[in-house]
Amino acid sequence: VNIFRTDSRARLALVRPMLFLVALFTVPAALASEVSPAENAVRAQKVLEHRCMVCHGCYDAPCQLKMEAHDGLVRGASKALVYDASRLRKAELTRLFDDAHTERRWRKKGFYPVLDNEDPTEGVMYRMLQLKQAHPLDSKGPMPEGFDFSLARDQQCPKPEEFDKFRKDYPLGGMPYGLPGLNSDDHNTLTSWLEQGAPRVPKTMLTDTERKYIERWESFLNADDNKHQLMA
Image (cartoon, rainbow, N blue to C red; front, side, top):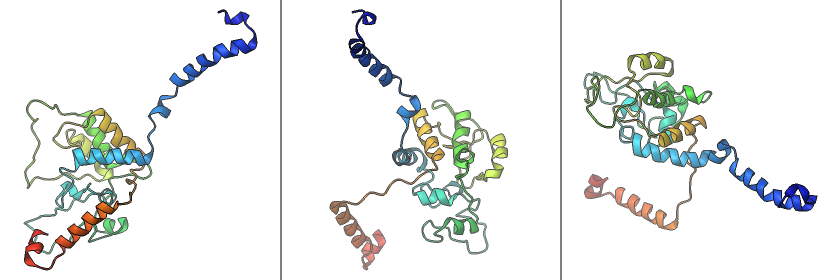
């Protein structure tokens, strides 16, 4: 059919499906790949649990940066050691959720931010991830010399203003430390989440079944007898 010899209605009927297909397959990539902050937060949490919390999920986490809760990221990092056998005075406790409850209080205890609210790409965490991408480690073969995994190692905990020097002195010090870097999908998930301001995972309502399990565990862990206290 020669559409240029048909009347305007017939021409429009023939052209309309073509226009639809063109619009369908030319959606901007940014729009097609756009992820909401809430959805990105859920994805980022899965990456943190899979690749980061193995080191940054305990009381003695490197630089005291704890990632098992969003409050740990907001609290940031510290140069102080949790366990220091050489100290002569009582150590100041820094238990998350116990010894301070606001970001301001943690700053008074010597913690510094790893997130940058004004420019997320300048945050310590973001730059640590980028450093590993710039200097990746092979997933196979021997580990390069210079890595120290001993319990008494000297930890390098750069503050934001110290990161340029750290990057120059320790090019292999990116995160995850001493391990292969994140794959492109996981890296993009974390960096895009940080660029969005590292939002919290939205809270969800507990089901009745979940509440019952929680009540059972709380009852078990808070019992008065010695057996239950030992288990707790």
